[in-house]
Image (tube, rainbow, N blue to C red):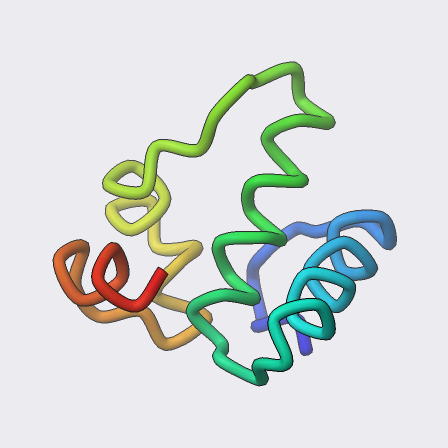
Length: 74
């Protein structure tokens, strides 16, 4: 599932699905982290700033409500 307004390519979606399968999880917060991390790597980044992803609104589109709860769930 890709939330409206979040630009992900097929590799981002597939990577997120793979990570969730490996973790035996359907957690949208894990899916968000994996998909946004993949998108960042494609863009040349080496890490995902969770705070920036949340403040940009992309993580919120996956149902992430706070940085603290996101970090705790991951």
